[in-house]
Image (spheres, rainbow, N blue to C red):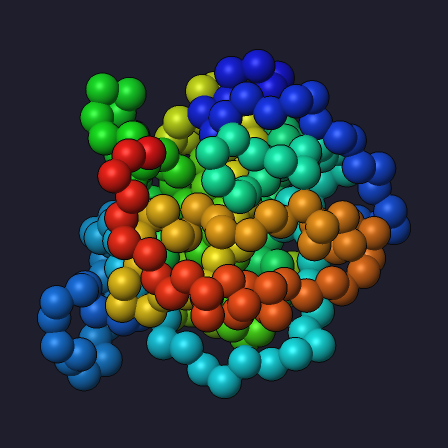
Length: 233
């Protein structure tokens, strides 16, 4: 299953045994008064919107594993940049890692093998700006829950969508999972896709632990700021 994943070709994944039971306006516009929700079917694609406004961060929040499934596999490394591909059956629930606010949402699969490599690789995707100040990103989704939109509040364990194979997943069902700072107002796919290695935190959450990435993300952000778009993938 790993042989042709669009996120890279890592070594065979480590299967982690289960434990226990299972917005802002479009960029460039001035903020208008609250408006009625867009009619069904008319929701714009918001993948390139900045994440929701940051609020004071909180420590000690509950964190949960991002895929609610009995059978999952992932590897501690990833090709080219920090991230993790979590392999599970298509249709398994992708959930919010912690309490927070929905940031970017992409409901359209705009990836094209002949087009630019990078901006649309994730296909259908959702990010959450956690109340811990960390952005959690999941992509290659099959679908996104109807009530998920930028600015919506979510709780740890709330379903955001389902595992899929959109974007450059190369027909392999998995969730690309990334951890990054929000970089409000300067967001880009090259940051959103992940800047620190998620595996140590996934290991903890899968076992019912609560290891928190906020300090690591904050340290990375202090050192690197919000890097400009890379010259290549």
